[in-house]
Amino acid sequence: LLLPRGPHMEQKGNADGWQVPLAGKALSQLPVPGLRAKRGPSDENQPPTEQVRSGGAWCQEGLKPGMGRGIALLAPASSASPFLPTAAPALAAGNDGKKRAAWDLKGQLSDMRTKVSSYKDKVQRLDGENQQLKRQLQEQVVQNRELSSQVSTLSSALHTCQEQAHQRLHEVMELSDLKQQLEEQVTSHSRTIGQLEGTKRDLSSLLETREVKLKLAEEGLAQRECENKELRGQVAAQLQVMTQQEERLHHLEMERRRLHNLVQELKGNIRVFCRVRPLLAWEKERQKGLEHLHFPLQDNKSDPHVCLSPQSHVGRDRKGDVKYDFSFDRVFSPACSQEEVFEEIALLVQSALDGYHVCIFAYGQTGSGKTYTMEGPDDMSPETMGMIPRAVQQVFQGARELEPKGWQYCFTANFLEIYNESLRDLLVGRPERGAELEIKRVSQSSEELHVPNLRYVPVDSEDEVLKLLRTAKANRSVAKTALNDRSSRSHSLFQLRIEGWNRSRDLHSVCECAVLSLVDLAGSERLDKSFSKGERLRETQAINTSLSTLGLVIMALSNKEPHIPYRNSKLTYLLQNSLGGNSKMLMFVNISPLEENLSESLNSLRFASKVNECVIGTAQANRK
Image (cartoon, rainbow, N blue to C red):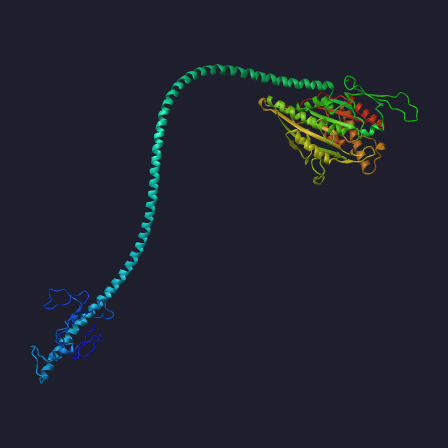
């Protein structure tokens, strides 16, 4: 608190640094914030003020540092004041207000002491007020801090509220847009409802029309139900007739099979066909015609004979009229086509589909046309297809024709060769071939044979079989001999396993599998004619041994000998189920038209004639 000093005051400091005047009549009271200042008797009814008037103008006192509000000492500037120089004479006045004489120093001193005592009391009172103001100031500081914290909290809350208000405003705008959309939808729905009501009225009228029609339809339906009952009766009768027809058809099919088999047995379970190949273009230049061969005309099937009459060499006399006459089941002249040849074996192939083992051989010397007969040429066409592709084609076609009668078939093909008495899989390339294949029984209780590790391929069409034939032809063992530049040095054996069943009659057509075996035998020429040496010699010896064993097996079967030498050759051992009495066999004996091959042709015809004389017992179908 700062008090103004006058010329007659001395400065005296206290503990609080207050300035106390030494003389004067009175001090104005300081206004304190929160406290009401004392007022004089003349201004009791006036508001307190913190300003003083000086010379007709208001002056503002400065604030002491550290105080909340400024405290000002108020006094009129025109009145006598002890702090001003003009008030010095008043210090000498007594307590009664009278002016003391100048010589009355004792009285003046007494008055001064009285005033000092009064000032001390006021200073003490002001110290107390100052302490109280300090406490109030501290409380206000604390309150200010609390208010600052509250202001910060309220500012944060205000910011949050502003964000929420902004969000609410955004939501309000969205709701406004949604409201507008909903209003548009309501308007659209109102229009739609109006349209639907119109449609409803139209539908109602249409429904009335439909109800009338429905009644008419119900009446018609009742009539149709009556007709339906009659038709059901007719259908039941037709089903019964159809069942009887199916039963009759089945009996006819079984009868057809029986008669077909009877015809085949009458023709012989072992049949031999002779086929003479035509001269090739380059052979016609060496030999003019076929004067040494005589066979019936192409259309004369009732006289299946072939006659060989050797001619003398140039410059020599003709020998006596020597003729070798052979009779076979069928003789095909060089003019016969592949289709004509297959017509004669088509019924035999049908027997395989009926459940019988069927085996067809092609026998003859190298270059006599065995491979052409069985497989056809390399550039095969529908006219030049051999017996194997034609037989497969017929089997699949017959299976499709039997499907409406309740028959289903499963086919599995394999193709192998027998080379030097060892088995080779022709459906597997040479680098991929493993160990030598062996022939084994399927089980101890079964006579069926199989070759483990041999590739058995399930086939569903003739095209798949043709692909297998091309693969086998590429893998077959061939070599050059004195009689042919490309001679087959092995027996090739194609087998098609056929399994058929008729589930509707619980009838299974096979017991172990009917097998259609088509064999292209190796060349049957003699050693002295083949001029074979080394590896070719061993091949020729193995071929001739297996062919001789084949003849011995057929003779033993014909003579009903107790022991059949199947195991003397891999060929006969593998085909033993197709050579016995429960099978049908056909042999093509192929002969060359060249006169220089007359001796080999004669040997082939003699071998085939012996086979043709054999008679094997009645065949039985493999059927459950």
